[in-house]
Figure 1: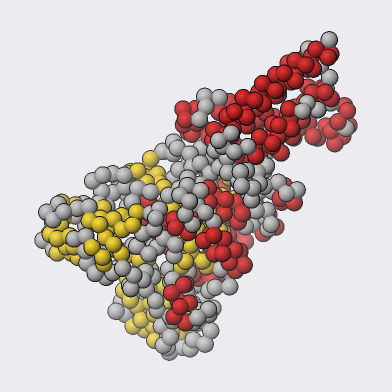
Figure 2: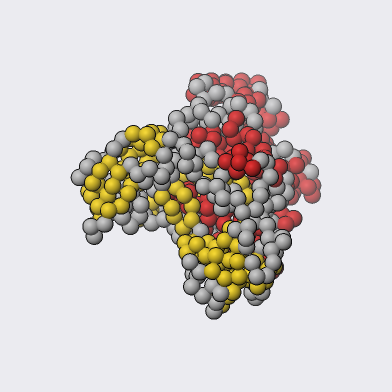
Length: 588
């Protein structure tokens, strides 16, 4: 262990000398209070340390001690339902120990050493195992089977293994490596956060991450293992959108990182998630969720670590063959932490003061997402989808964090303050957003939902784009100047916006829509458009077409339950045909 002393303190940055034997990214204990820090730069025997706790009151000459290991997280039973800070300190355990206020230098193990877990062995004595193999299962919650994995880099033969009840630090068995070494098999393992966990192969995105949000699933889908960004100004609904995705996305595990957001927003998450019922299991949503809470009033350096802590935990569950969804809210606050540390290190600033390596750091984070074949003899299919919120100042996405993010991610859900103020949720602007996964997912939608899905989606997007052009004409000369066919197009576009894209997050039925029901909704709107256009050509009056009673039924179809959707779809289709024929008879 390398020991030195403080020579300079500048906010969260501490310079220590006498650290020649320490390594870059080593975790260190700073001062007599043993604050947690990490070496981020070395010059000779001088180490620059970012401290993850408040540094007020530190003095030159106080001791600094390197632990000799990089910043790592503990991975094992106890993660699910846990609430951790940016460096994986368990906030509930700390509260039980010292009360509501965090004190400096507190040392609490990330995973409880007192909890007893029921381990069920799936391997036997004499079995050969390779890195990534599951040796047993712990039923962590009613919904999550926590697989106990052989750590990466370890291969060999099991000498002993036994089912039973164990605490984390009690070995469940022994393994003899190919070199003849004997290793204890534990319920948990440690992994450095800045190093991605290994896998066999990364696959192309061909399956969607179904979210139940119509504007996302239909218009701008994200693939399993995909990466997406939600930029938007203050109050446009980034957090509510991420809550919806956390609740409804078809993911086995959700990792939610509150990185530098306001404390009251994180409080809402902590209060809401335990009460939300998981629609897929009927249990509390927290029983498949890990929360990383690192609010804006917590030390700035810990924001930077929180992103890596969260994605390492997400990779661990991906390695079990699970589909994991990671929400980072928000990467802008993380970038601000990078900017502050870069400034204190006196590095050459890039655009708007951000460090020149901002883009590469963002890329390193997002590149850890993906759908992979996991390590182990079974070679399971696991996926990690990363969705990052971006909070550009004033909603200006030309700023560096938004632009660097857009160069990396494949899905851009651009939130619009104008839509948010009109109470249009989700406030995703259909004219500025895009998804580069649309073509690669087209085959899946055609095969698993409907052969007409992609053509209907394209038609609806075209109608919305044409509506935007027609609106410019209406502003100049008024609605009466439009032809009957253009007026019909405007009405259908309004129906797409208000009846399809608009969704009520807090309505018991409308909060989530299955792909099958989304397909019915598209077909109803486009069926009305096609049949009304034909009727219009036969001489029908546009006012009468717009005022058909069936339009109310089409608009309220989103409140029909999934069980009744098919019957209602057939009923509305028949009513539409009847009303149009009646209209033509009257015209004659």
